[in-house]
Figure 1: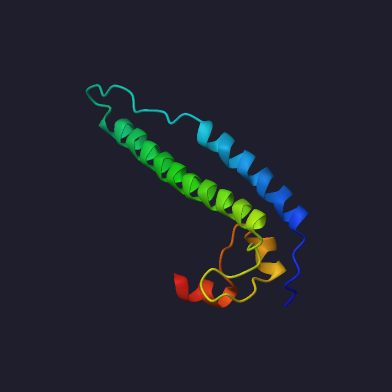
Figure 2: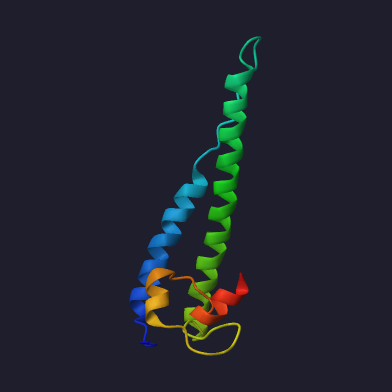
Length: 111
């Protein structure tokens, strides 16, 4: 496994992803409209869509924090070090999940 990570490239990818997630978080969640007689099914679909959007927003907020944490780890010099075992995080893992904080082995046991 290659443990050498191009930190400038990683920082650029993380900054790009941070901007994308920030834009995603800026999108407004549409509230369900007023329920009229006979439109309960439509109202249920609207509520479901709103709940789905709220879940996506929570996921985006977690990803935003993880990306900010990864950028801080680059600044601190700990980006390539697993937060759980202290071993190296492979460049391949960071290629797939740039905000990863654990090596593959610790990532498997963390879930």
